[in-house]
Picture 1 (cartoon, one colour):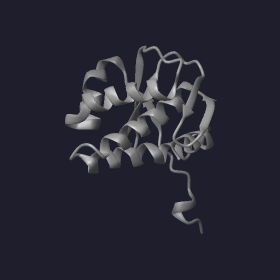
Picture 2 (cartoon, rainbow, N blue to C red):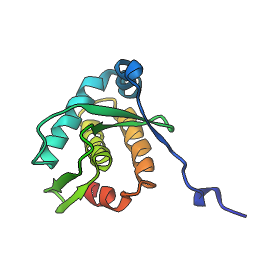
Picture 3 (cartoon, helix red, strand yellow):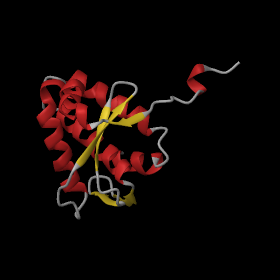
Picture 4 (tube, rainbow, N blue to C red):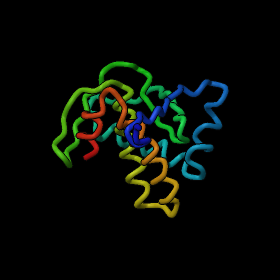
Length: 141
């Protein structure tokens, strides 16, 4: 008999349609919506020397979490000074990385740490089954 913990998590990510963009971030991040969004942009600027802004897609996770992805679709060079990681990842993996960094940093600054921690772990659970898992985990280590 299989142990349930051995089964794939089956967490799915879906692009948030334009009709729900305005409600998605507040639903997912509550009163810290603007802080989370700004921190994601700041983390991208810090971790990607080539980042110059742009349009971002929002992704909703089937486990209640979410993340942001730069819409360019081009590979992204990420460099994390704190742990020595440097590599090129997909835009989706870069979005996962910078959203995880943003949630972690904000959890130390705001009283909503439980919600931010929950969102971090929901996204990390998704990242564990991502095709670029190794790069994501190396970047956030």
